[in-house]
Amino acid sequence: MRDIRIFLFHRVSGNKENWTHATHVSIFEKCIKYIIANYTVKTVEECLAVKGSLLHGKAKPLACITFDDGFKDNIIYALPILEKYKCPASFYMITGCIDKGLPTWPHLYSNIFENTRKMKLVINLPELGINVDKHFKSTLERIQFGIDLVKKIRFVPPQDAETILDIVKQNFNDVEDPHNMMMTWTEVKQLCESGYPIGSHTHTHLKLTAVKDDEQLKYEMVHSGERIKELCGKFPAAIAYPFGLTDERVTKIAHDAGYKYGLTVGQRAYNPGLDINLMAVPRVDIYAERSWLKTNLRITGHIETIKKIVGR
Ligand SMILES: [Zn+2]
Image (tube, rainbow, N blue to C red):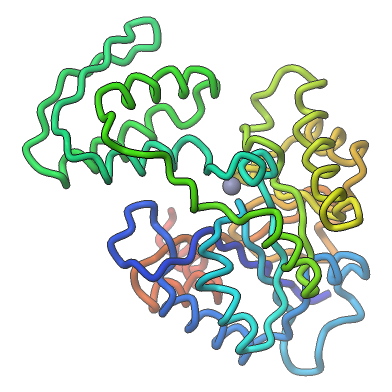
């Protein structure tokens, strides 16, 4: 059976300097134009429902477009392009972020480090291994420090990330939380009424494989699905695991929660003949490459081929 390439996007932005690494809207348009020209595009949900076998066009292979997280820029920049090229796509929401109207904590960090005018940062948290006493010489240095800090604490328990965030906020107390970064429920509803499947990306975007408590795991997935059901009328068919991470326990709980499909990140195509576990379907993250050439290599999969050849 022929492969299906399931592409993953996150943010799409009109701002080239955006340090949270959004795909620039001009590159995004090139992606969609290229994908529509070279693939038959269907939604993941359609493809997985028939295991892809019936949907292949005569000449073109199948592809799907997905968006994780639920950023408002998807509506502002991506949706008009999807409409222009009549390109189907599915959107996976972090329902807790839609509820609160705020992005996950790494984005709260980025917002602060990017927008503060202050240059001095002191964090004294030896119990978390964080000791900082810095006077930044430039805005760029401060922003880079923010990026490195988020990388360092990416997988700490959320309450620790929030403790650190509180202290950063005390230092940089001249910045407001970014209240307009996420879609609203009204926008989510409009998306689903326009025929774009809405799925879950959990309630709070935890690294699910690290959550020890089964009840908490269940809540992340069930509650998220129910929030979507309340607004869109039906429990979502698919869940996209945060960071693309899953294991046997997580997929079982996701399946028991009512999901038919689970989406991971595998940087390879989904093969309906070989990938028989529909709760762990691989996607290709396009990342936010700055060049069209590199983005195109990701779409075609040539970047993986090159990596194999050079042994990386
Ligand atoms: Zn995510």
